[in-house]
Amino acid sequence: MVEYEFRELTFHRASDRSTVRRALTEHAEYGSWELVRVRLFWGGVRKVVLRRKIIRVQRTA
Image 1 (tube, rainbow, N blue to C red):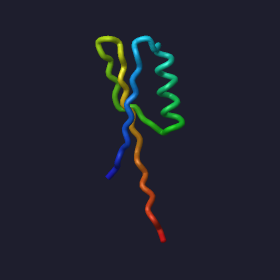
Image 2: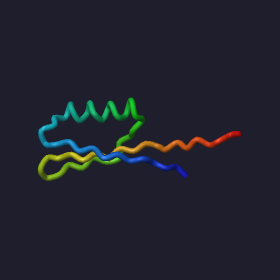
Image 3: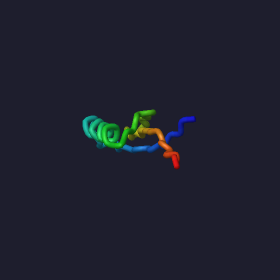
Image 4: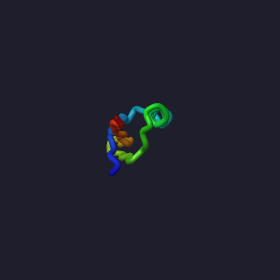
């Protein structure tokens, strides 16, 4: 069974699209996060949910 770790990021209304894209790209490239959901709220706030697999190391000896 695959287990995931989740992270929620919040971007305020003043954040432009390029800033949000740059932040998400950095999380994806360096942290191995993948995009799950983007919600745009009435006031212009964006909430982004990211996930990545939890890799469990099993002892061999």
